[in-house]
Length: 339
Ligand SMILES: *Cc1c(COP(=O)(O)O)cnc(C)c1O
Image (cartoon, rainbow, N blue to C red; front, side, top):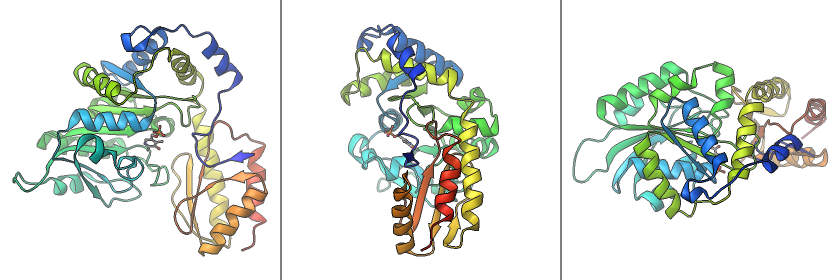
């Protein structure tokens, strides 16, 4: 089976499982799990931050970030494609009692000017703009990402108006292998960053929230109240450490495979449009809804799984469990389809 549904579908490699089996563990609610302590240390240092918190999911790290940076009646500004707006069950309202101002950016990216214009004046009848969230890479934007200059410009607006800045970096490493940006510099621009280990990095479970000591201390309380305080989860942390050692550099392979398939997709007669490919995600549209459904069925008949991403759109995500031998199979299945 060639599973292009998401980069969350990867399974631990035998080497990763071996590393997990050798993990030294303890009770993390008492901060006594050496493997989790090691992982939190490593990831916070990587981004030049003082602390990090290991959580069961990226939804939880994002939700905790919203919680620590806001009070009820505040407002968060983000692109309307953002994961926090689209795919977290409306948790910003449920967990934090805040409003959201989803801006229409370009492929999931907003500009400093848009952020500045979105800041609400201080009136009793308006929510207070308190936080900006960026997503790098942007999933629904087709894996698009911000350049450092764009981030810097948004950070300058945040500083000017005293806003916090959070990065949903679920796939940040897919970006870093492209831009070669220094993670420590990126860390300087954000108050908190969420990193997923269970996407392209191939760990089975886990995300980290990095930030300053005070923010992460408060984050620990919210993790506990959300039911995310885990005990001997060092087995999972060990998988994440293994992924940091062995699965970062190879992400460029996934990005390049996505580009290579998108070059073919662009030439196919039944395709209407392909979103620009920047990292490991391709989103393309077929000319009709029926063609979209039929293509999904045709791919399935060829043992290729993908997801429908809108009425006429399909998403492919490339990851660790896609091998070089699968590439010609994907290409020939796309070429052999007639709507
Ligand atoms: C996957 C993802 C998350 C977190 O998802 P979980 O499944 O809860 O780990 C957050 N943001 C983005 C952009 C994602 O793609």
